[in-house]
Amino acid sequence: MALTDVAIRKAKPTDSPVRMFDGGGLYIEIVPSGGKWWRLKYRYAGKEKRLSLGTFPDTGLKAARDARDNARKQLAAGVDPSAERKAERENARVAALSMLERAARAWLAHRSKAWKPGTLAMITASLENDVFPSLGSRPLAEIQPRDIRDAVQAVRQLASRSAPSGQSR
Image 1 (tube, rainbow, N blue to C red):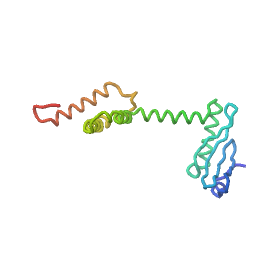
Image 2 (image 1 turned 120 degrees about the vertical axis):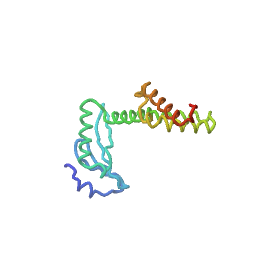
Image 3 (image 1 turned 90 degrees about the vertical axis):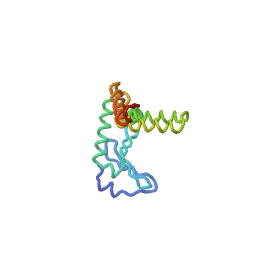
Image 4 (image 1 turned 90 degrees about the horizontal axis):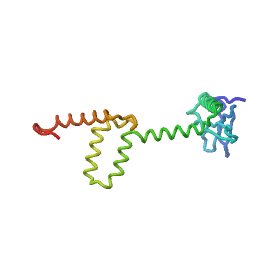
């Protein structure tokens, strides 16, 4: 028998986890603390696996069924949904680390012990004021030499406008 939204809402926690099945491997697990977790039970390469699909009511019955259907399509294509999710998370983590600002801040943290506080502050301020606004959120792999040249030229123009007449930085 398929689950209904009303049945899920009325389900109360007990001393041990309770599973209410919907079909196609989808079920909701109600834990003693009151949480309601959507799970998908499936087999891949001969092994039984479980995949978390969210919590109720944040993830409703229809959304959980859609997630189940997507996971089953992946299985039909020979892809383990759990491994695919892990790969997506890792790719997102690597992409976030490869942004110029994050890489520069990691470099600053690494170099900070070798610099005097004033040097660190000056370099940090220069990056924050001159580089991060235009290039900070860009992936390192996408930054081209012309992008760096443009940023340097913008800093030079700003410096030449702010320097007293007859002097330049």
